[in-house]
Image (cartoon, rainbow, N blue to C red; front, side):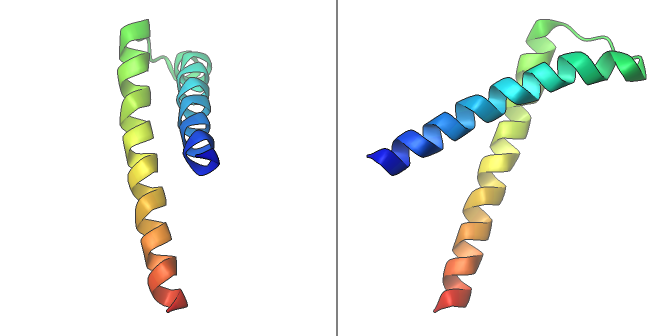
Length: 65
């Protein structure tokens, strides 16, 4: 259960950081987006991050065997 709690917390914190970072960095590059856009972009990054984490874990598990 603690592993599930850790993963969930990591995803939620990562999502929040992604959205907050976009809101700060995008205007530096002249990119203006709505809060909804930021949230959707953040979800895309979360999906990529989850896939990356899963695939790397599987790769390292395979290498360990």
